[in-house]
Amino acid sequence: MLVTVYFSDINSLPVTGLTPTISIYDLDSNTRTINAVAMTEVSNTIAQGWYKYDYTTIDLSHSYTVNVDGGAIITTPSLRYQVGVLSPMLPEVPAVDFGS
Image 1: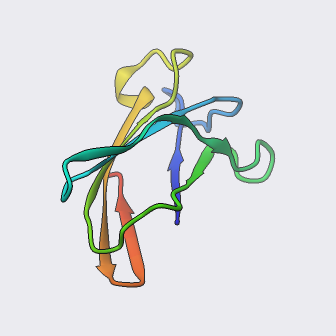
Image 2: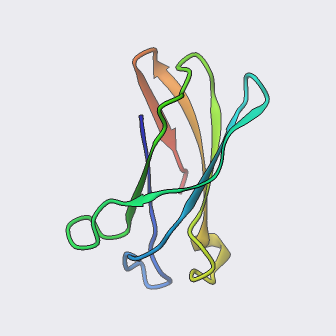
Image 3: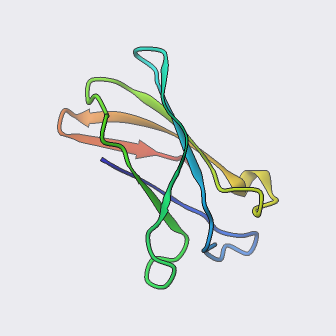
C-alpha cells in the first residue's frame, strides 16, 4: 500500500528535493513497524511536493499511526511534521487521513 504525503512552504507552494522519513506504529500490536525510513519523491516536475512510501507489511485488520518528518530544511514545525491515521475502511481498501 502506498502512503503519500504532501509538503508545502509557508506560502503554500510545493516543496521539492526533500528526503522525508516515515515512522509507522501498529496500534493493535503496540509495535513500531517502520522507524524513520526514507520516503521517495513522486516527481519534482509533475507532482511537486508529493512523497510516497510503499508499506508492504501492512496488516489490513490493524490500525496504525503515521508520522512523517519533512526534514530540517522545513523550519516551520506545523509544515515539517505530518501525522495521520492508517486504518482499513474495508478489508481491501485502507485509507490514510493526515488531517488538515
